[in-house]
Length: 193
Image (cartoon, rainbow, N blue to C red; front, side, top):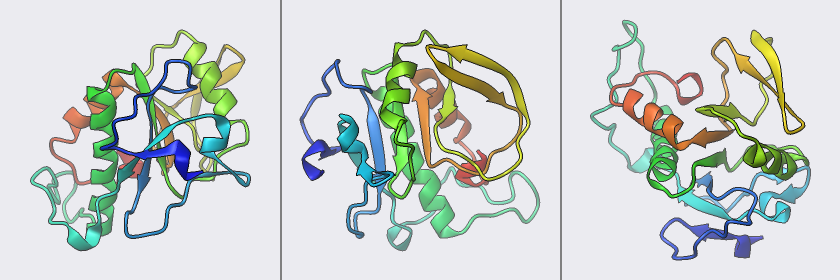
């Protein structure tokens, strides 16, 4: 529903009664707009206003000074597309860090989200949580988790390993500031960061 999606440069303010005060959709502007499907229903159908962030285009970019190949391991480097993906997420981190909301959601435009996505965000936003990042997407891999914590009907567990996905996540202002500070020099994939 394009009328529920606005450009980052738009002047429309988020209303406090919305499910999430800051939701950002990373989208490649040279492609047709895809909103994350909720089993056939776009995010806008859940009552969320989503701000579209134009993703960094690998065809038009020069790697930034923060990208430092081989700074983690010898011969470790990223493709231009991987750097563009990382830089696109950094735009979202800065928007959350510098915004007025205490947290926000970052979604890639091809993420497949649960039909319960909006309800889950509403429960999380009502819960008194101290967090940096809460992953909202799944990963098709065996993972090591910490103990389960239940809050406001949502079960959360700490992830004790690298998870190769960053398609959708809830990020606090403090978490966004930490990620941006850590990205002052990087050479790893966004999904692993």
